Length: 120
Image (cartoon, rainbow, N blue to C red; front, side, top):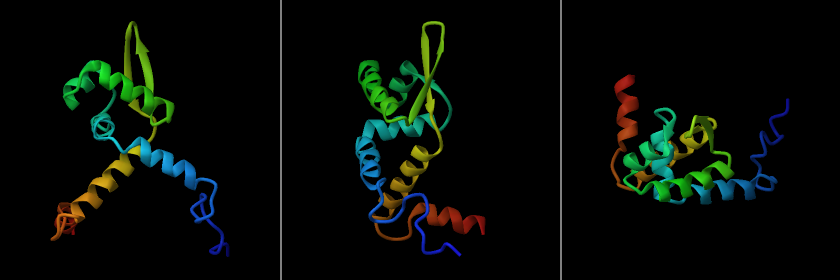
């Protein structure tokens, strides 16, 4: 009935296109992508994330501040410690899809397609 109407602003002239570009630019940094991947396993402190992504806590804090401003991560305070977690599943999905797309650039059948075949 409404098949010709855009869903969730996904038409080329949508007001959300510019915001989507900002989301992509936020994820156009390897450290931030690694942080998103690490947070898929659950909330982490800055120190834990710094160890996981092999960066200094100060550098990780700066990246987390940007991710927090973009509302991709949220925080929980426990005493003097702050824990970070993904705000929702969308950033995780975007990162996964970007990695899947990257696998396609290597040629052949990407690993994620093998995983799908194994489940069939």
